Image (cartoon, rainbow, N blue to C red; front, side):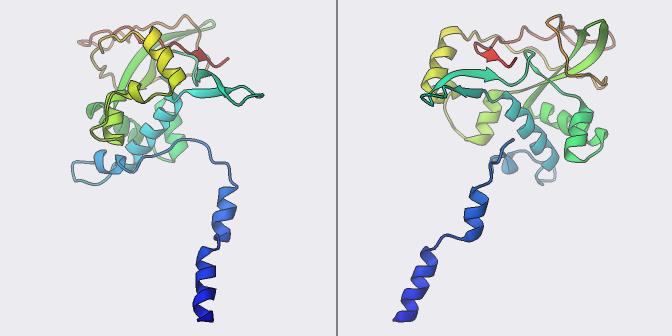
Length: 222
């Protein structure tokens, strides 16, 4: 009887490892388990690199909450990047995940082909420099929602109250343009001015220009 009580007491104790891990402040992207069932190679195996890249891109598209220090209430939502879309190079992902640039490009192409991701190449003016074929990436919210929460409802209906009111008040949805199939890249910097153009490289023959980008109603990071 005494042994049974001791065993029950131990089972109710918190693991030391659980306590220590709970003290760690984790940050960064999150990978939903359902993605491993949806983002696969033709062989049926999970496409781990594509999953990690999509998770990183989605992280940057998640709005950042800015809270009032006195009340703790959310006062504004901020966009994490300065341009209207996320600008990242193939090499930046290759360095981040410890793979080759070719592997990165192939994974991003697979995400585009499965319509989880849209790619756009632009000519960007940064100071006195003009950079061509600068890669911009944007997730397709509807398809990301479908693989995260299958048979879910409109994502706007599940937004927080403050975000929902902002979205419904000033969000103008535009028709998505065709996907650009350009397969070259140019190394870029993070300094992007408001002189960005939505034009693609002249070498991208046969592709239509991208549609106007949706404007978010939130503040952007300084």
